[in-house]
Amino acid sequence: MHLYLKLFFILVLTGCTNSSSTDTPLLKKSSTHDFFPSKVGNEWVFDRYSTASFSNYNENWAYDGIDSFGFNIDSLDVSLSTFSFEVERKKNILIEDTLYEAHIINNGFQVPYYFGNKGIYNLGIFINSNDSLLNKGLYIPKPIPENVSWGGQLSFVIDGFLKTSQVYDRRVVSKNEIINTPAGSFECIVIRTMIEEPIDIAGYTTLFEYYSKDVGLIAKVKMNWVPDLYWQLEYLDLLKRYQVDIHKN
Image: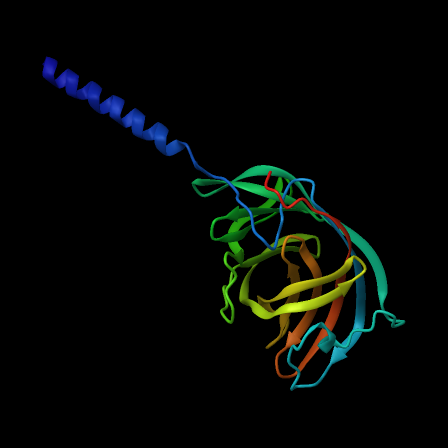
């Protein structure tokens, strides 16, 4: 009888120990990335040149530098606005059974990024604790591959709704490209992202993002693109000023 009681208590204690260990999520700390210095307090201010009437119907068009868009910022059909984004704070984000130390980028919405050893991961988007859409997807690998698509996800707001979309194709399409902005001239890599959800039968919302080492995002072009048919530009962002500390928090 005493033997059975001893076995019973051993099983109970073992079960409790295992339960408590599995209830504690693993915390993954953020590191850093050369092309996105993400210290709390870092800030980037951009000029945005928006248009609704700039299109290209050359079916043989191919990207050959930012000038290949033929964008004229002095055009009468271009409107100018200014916006900023900053690394606002850190926040632990729970996804499945893992806690990620996220850096919260405030660009009007709260966008969490996890800086892991293998790259930067987008963790979704949220406005507050009651309005969030959290999911982990690769944004920029470390190191950044050449001529290889790495997929991933992109989070944004459309028609007032939070949205996380899978990427159809994301890759480096140019490197060592000099980009001139109001903040100066920068040597950049260019990452093209085509969102998986088509805008029509064969078209994709497409981003060209220009990153410079130890500075971050320098410029961005957003357009609707139907490969081998036409594209329509939506906006061009150019860095106006920035305040960046490359050292880790």
